[in-house]
Structure formats: structure tokens, C-alpha cells
Length: 178
Image (cartoon, rainbow, N blue to C red; front, side):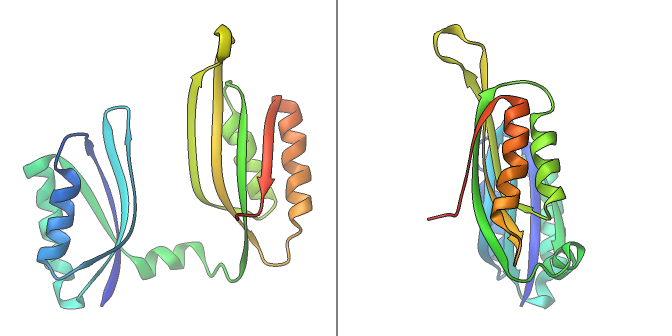
């Protein structure tokens, strides 16, 4: 079996996930993991599937055809190549990050730069904005699952992020996942 990473994007409408999963199933594949989202009228997803090696080319052609039939562009990458691009992560320490504060430009850049400087890898990131209570502007909020290389002191990461939080005037929590 070959594992493939499928990245998909298209104008959001009913049936996109169904069309994608149907092709995986028709080609003897198994849907292993996914992250799917609706954002600004678009559907976007990343899916890890497992497919018999002899069916990979046929599946790839069928997924290419989804652009014409349902408007979904699907990029197919061999998971071994995708893993090789990031290197061998080895043992990692997970941390959960939550940030909230007045929205302003550059927040994501500053936080992610501080994490990268500490050798951290972002496993999952969700961000959103909402109206602040009582007309107080717009709040920016982020939740992330962050992986630290084994042996990295979470306290150092916390200190680096707390410096950023003070500059950005945001509340920041960094905890080990439950």
C-alpha cells in the first residue's frame, strides 16, 4: 500500500467531500486522516489516504478529473516524499497554545517566528476573529498544537512567547495537552 497526501481546494458547495471520498474508495483506497475547512466561500482540505500501489496512477487521474466535474482541484503527493521534505522529527514534546487579543497585522508572523526560533513545529493551527464585547473592536484568537524537539525546555518557549505576548498585548496560554 502507498500513502498519499491529497490537498484539495474549490468553491464550497455540497458534495465535494463525497466526490473525493468516492474516488478514493473506487480505487481501493482507505481514508486515514483529514483536516477539512470552509473559509471565505472556499472548501480546503488535506487528506491522508492509503491506496494499492498499482492503483495510484488511476486514482491520480480520477482526482484530476474532479476539477472538471465538481470544481475541486486535488494535488497528490506521495507521503514518503512529504515526510522526507520535513526531515525526521524524532521524539517531540506537544504543547497547546491559545492566544487572544485585539486584532492587528503581524500577529501570526510574530508568534510563528518566535516558535520557529525555538525549533517548534506547528502541528495544527486555527485562527479567527470576532467582535470584541461592548464595541471594543475586533479580537483575534488562535489555537495551536505545537511540537517541540525532544529535550527542548518548554519553559524557554514559554518565555519567548510571553515576551511576544507582552509586545502584542495579548493573553497567551501554553500548556501540555491533556
